[in-house]
Image (tube, rainbow, N blue to C red; front, side, top):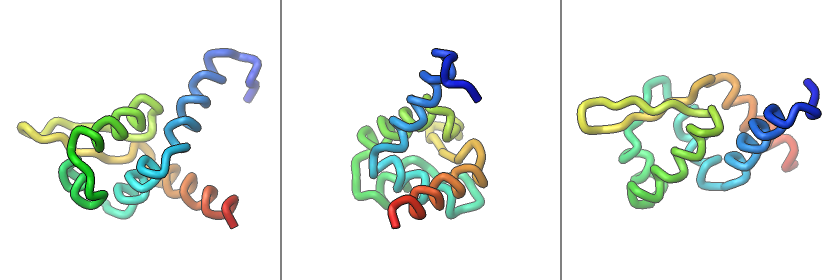
Length: 98
């Protein structure tokens, strides 16, 4: 992979920017621990945050290509795009932090 390509650098920058926030890392950890998509309201409750703030973090993760959002009736549910990759990212972050 070459970082000379500015489009590729911008995409990677979005991913790293999304991962730089502790709330977003917690969201990824929560959704990677379940086999089923979770309602964003349930994630907000788990984080003890309001829905709007949680959704703003989820939107950053979506724009970075890390999660997907589905409309289920009037609710929105969230799941990782690539569960194994998200688990690897979280594991790598823990290893770096040791």
